[in-house]
Length: 168
Image (cartoon, rainbow, N blue to C red; front, side, top):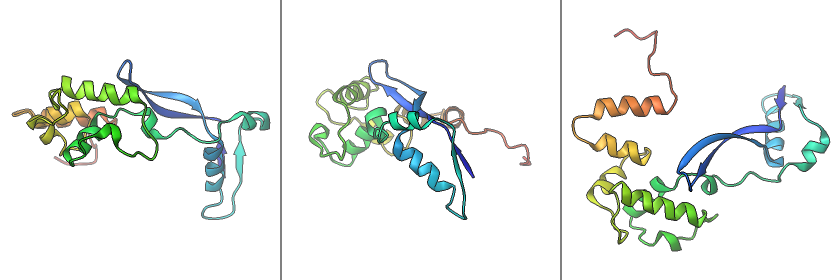
């Protein structure tokens, strides 16, 4: 048995403010159908939708692709490190907003990971090796603060830092 509400928390990135946040947004019809499918995945089941049919009829058909609502600094940094120089002409399945791309370039230049001409700096090349947020990747690469920066990154991810069962 599953219960389906008509809202979900979705991570949204605002390129104007360069802030990512969780927002409550209406789910899409595709998400509602997927949630109903979970009710009978392992055995027969029922999905209770906790909203009216009229609400279901007003839901968007699909959820916007994540690339249209995410910070693009790390993907651009990694693409550049792989030798994809002209990221603006890259053939995306779904193109990200131009403003997000421009803000990502500005952020990479400000973080000294990319030059004004679009080439990566040595800091950018090293930071691209880490699957982390650009700021944290740069912090991890700084000398003498590896342990401390990993603790900050771990806390930022929202995972439990200490395990009570573990004996030190």
